[in-house]
Image (cartoon, rainbow, N blue to C red; front, top):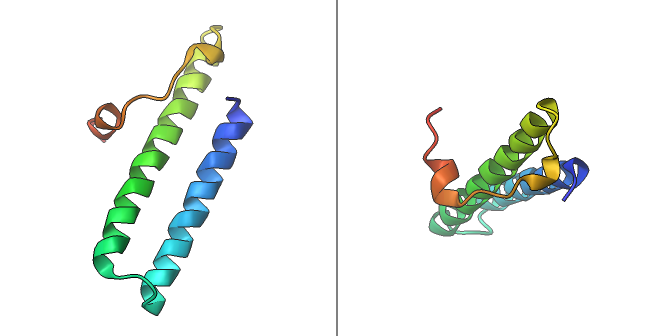
Amino acid sequence: MTEQDILARIKQLVADEHELRAKATSGEIDPVAERRQLAQLEVMLDQAWDLLRQRRARAGADESPEDTSMRPAREVEGYLQ
């Protein structure tokens, strides 16, 4: 997966989030389903951003960005902000 692929994935996830919020505002989706789906999208976004940061850090250290992998949700969600 290239940096461009990751950025495209992030863009798609953000678009999905906006669409979900619009559906919730118009009443097309119930609040429980909205919260569940938003939580899933947030985790996927966090994982994608983490992968992008890993790749950029490796490239900055003259290492191969290809040696990165997406970290598990539990690990990414456990980071301190």
